[in-house]
Amino acid sequence: MAAVGIFGQYQTAAWKVGSKERIYFPVASIEEFHQNRLVPHERPYRRGARHDHTGAKAKAWSIVARFFNSPDHETGVNGEKLYPEILNKLCDSFDEHEVGTLTTPTRGDRRCMAMSYRRQEDAGERDEASLQFVFAEDNEDDAEAAAQQQPSPPATIAADGDDASAAL
Figure 1 (spheres, one colour):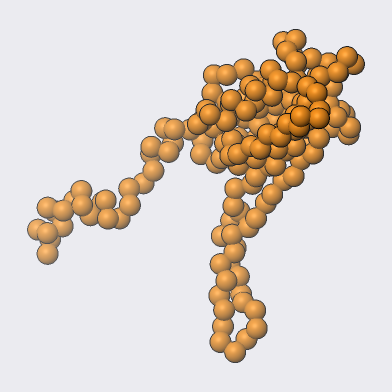
Figure 2 (spheres, rainbow, N blue to C red; figure 1 turned 180 degrees about the vertical axis):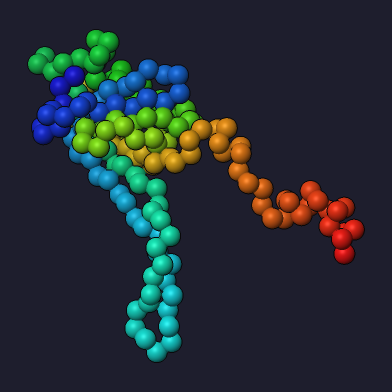
């Protein structure tokens, strides 16, 4: 699959979620969003605030892809047409509520969840659609690790309720 513009010099963008096959797609533009968690501590009679850095929020990637068919445009990996076959597969993958692997041309593989997409088709354009989609970084290693979370203090006290009352 031929990538658009400068992205043709890098690896092909792809999305794989669950047991589904990897979906390769052309990228027109990528926007990466990063934000730090800052806790402000304002002081009386002083402008501004002192900030504590408590780590980074999840990164997000907003990608614009154009899917179209033309005689000189290559088909997908399995001979599928970009429009509508690969486009529909990519949109349908957002119904899978699992963590997947997003491969971007310039940042490589990222562990993400499909967040949203906006598909735009125009009656004046034949065999063409534009898709803007957003992926959010996921930092949980796996479902087993999520199940191994430490219990909250109220849950610990409730579990030890009889022992706690005897100690008083």
